[in-house]
Image (cartoon, rainbow over all chains, first blue to last red; front, top):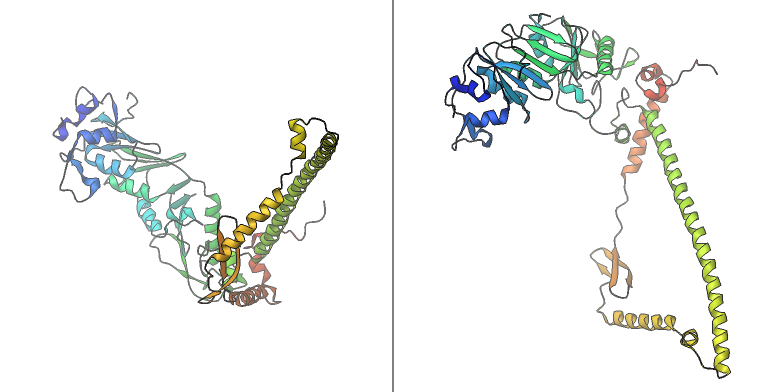
Length: 104
Length: 347
């Protein structure tokens, strides 16, 4: 289980935090592995909340849906994914240098 | 290309002029970029803001929200089949470009060309280079042109025909002659449907006549068989089962008569219902052999709307027939008139 933002890269099967991951995940899978159940949440949509805060601006992810593609840093990953709002959204880890991620 | 420093502010300024979803103008939720200008309208206001970006694109609320989610502003933009925003550190945002709004852009530009600077509309201060106007109250015709009064692109949710009947028409957008043309078309279609129904009925009747002719031949055959069986009976010959069947009366008609009589007697024994019930009057009763049905009816009040509506329609339509009505004002707006080319010769 990943309990801090430093270990997020491991979910994508990469070798090191500065290297791109080897797998692309659906954002739903990614979210489920980084969230905890908050039974005190007032809104149903907030029942699953992140287990830790994400602040790193030097780690990058690519988000891909049917009509949007975005490369964002770790700090804005959840915010941008939420605004894309696609249930089939996919996420890939690009390492510490954003690039086109063509090897994923 | 590098994103012009004012572009996001210009986009936000144009966004303020967009409106909610409307069936008649689904594009009014978005800002439209076309050849260095941003356009938006909520049907009562129109804006055109000059920007330094070529190409055509649609910027929706989602696009702006996505940009906001990055927290800092992009530094580059590319507009083509996709809209791409780029940041210095390599981040980017790419969206599919759904632009298909050439006609809408033309309408925005034409309305701004026609009315910007005129007293017929209100000029709006933008804080950016461009033009913005808003509808105000005032006379319907200004400088021989029909001024926008209730909407730049559409009027409410009702149809032009209903608005004419309610005395609520907007001559700038409601093509009165199209209403008549549609009525003529609808009447023709109704008559075509009626003709088709009658032709179907004719085919059915012709088919029935063929069957009936066959039945008549069959009846004749049965009569011959009956005569033959009767002759056999009279001469004392032994009768077959078929002969007996030919001679056996069915009495269907009398059986039905007896049944009907029985039903009638049963119906008469039922308790009588009152002839009237609080303004309702009994007008018919019947039984279908299983149930008895009693019908009550009450006259509805005579509708008064027709007379008033006819008068309103006549008054509105008479306006455009008056000799001092500037016919040119509607020629540009009404499609039925725009289609006519008076100077076009034969061939």
